[in-house]
Amino acid sequence: GSGPAAWLIREVLGVKPRRPGFAEVAIEPHCGDLAWARGTVPTPMGTVSVAWSKDSGGGLRLETDVPEGIGETRIYANCPRSVRLDGICADASTDEDGRRVLKIQSAGKHVIDLC
Image (cartoon, rainbow, N blue to C red; front, side, top):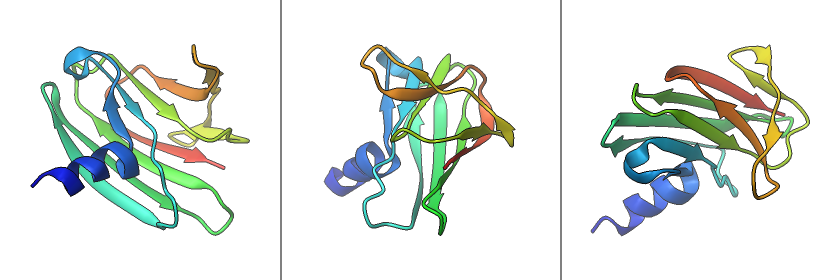
């Protein structure tokens, strides 16, 4: 069945729709004791790819590839001290639920470092 695959996508990779039809996507990986994970999620807009890995200092690197047509990608993290988007310092904001979030407005490939 698709039970384990759905769990991997939803929890470990953390990919969820924010709007119907994946018009917007949220990525909130739950790493647990894993050192890394990677996978793809088929959506009506195309395939969302996510890979993440932990570093020895407790940071997390996310590599995402989001298709055109997805209007916004939100990256949720556990209160990062700093956020880098494609190698440049980026500002995380607070969402409507009070959680720290990095909002990415462009599709394509991105590298996000949370440390």
